[in-house]
Length: 617
Image 1 (cartoon, helix red, strand yellow):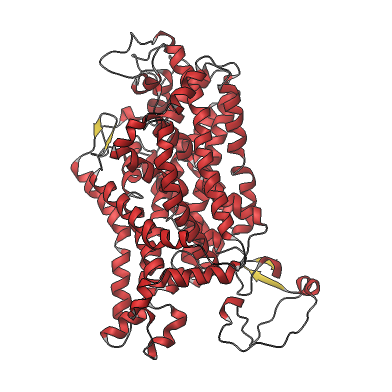
Image 2: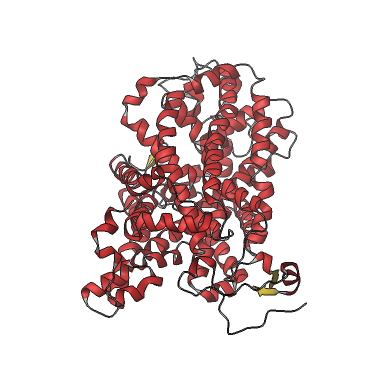
């Protein structure tokens, strides 16, 4: 097999040939070239069909990219958050603000990030060669993606622990009498509406076998007095975490060639399991009541601003814009790929999945309410309480309970794995595109990244680890990620220019985005993000976990984590300004002008210094 020798010929992609004289056509047998030319990257050989003209690796197949995007966007929140939000915010009425924000902000931002990554063929940091001053935004989202890995992998480890625990004749959370149970553990069959007093709902009752297995058997929270009393990492959860990290490493170490195959399982399995769980759920007594409660329409709820805030934040976090993942994934597409169609398809699939999962969840919640003689609102909950307490308890009452538990936790595991893969790929691609030595040593860099997150994650699997996880969940990717995407939207639509961005898309796909998309990018999406940023700050409740209220110092630590990522935006802009020689005006010009147009700055032709640039749509 022959290797491509280094030549003094620079091959430019088609979209960069505007200033180069056309060459006379020279026919080459394509099939023959594919058989001969081989490139060695990171110790793995690829034919030229696997890399583009610039030497960048490409997805093996289009379906690899689509499944990777869907797998990243469809995560645990689609199952444990959206159905409950829909139920408590007016049922079917909640779909009105949710759908509105999807079309005016969610899809446009999704489309923008895919197009941005695909055209520039770069990760989240180096993509800002279009406006160098904003490169700090790239570092912000990369750091946030890394922070999320510190605790998100722990939740996947919980799922793996539950999966291992399900391979028994009798599920460990089915009855009291286990070594982790307290003296107050109560048989669920004895709990009904008259048993619960003082306004306690069944979902908040912590003395059931399922609740005690989660809090005492898995988390060991009863052995911690608070976030100041963490203790040592639990050995059983540590082993699960190591397994999760190994899965992530071997899924990512060869780039999109390996991760693109893993998602064939991780992205499709949740749909199969959800369908099976739904079919089983609707056969249970009380299931119809649960589904009716899920879909009941209460238009009066739309008068509450919190409903609109919940819809806005959910659509943003659900689609996953701003973490650098979509930019990274799209950068491995072929240059002429139709990312417009991909954006519509994948964002729609994500939202439909959220809605569909509600049927599987609320059919079982209806069954639980029927079984205990309580209202739906008494068993309805969100987050870990839903997927690690209420749903497992419901499963434990069914025939073949171990089978249902196994497939349920396989679903949670696969939902988490491909989302974690996306976040880690954003970090790896973002930094390796910026620092070429990391790209040359991708396997080693992937190993360091994966196991580096493991070391920090150990704090979240101690006796008080749930407090660390709660703090990171609130602050690591809260206001900071909203701020990052807001600056990103402003940088692309205003400083780089929505008209030029549209021209870039036209070069890729042969058509220009319609007026609707351009208006959303320039006005609606930034306004939407500004609204969500303000709401996230103003409406932020005190940090707590159940009845435990975090001390004031922990909130300061949390805001320190949030600010640590946001600081990259102004810090890099200041660094860039002072690192460029020239007058004040020249420095500003170089900072906000695309790198391939810096020669125009020297000529005094700065597009951003003209009113026409800022008014263009």
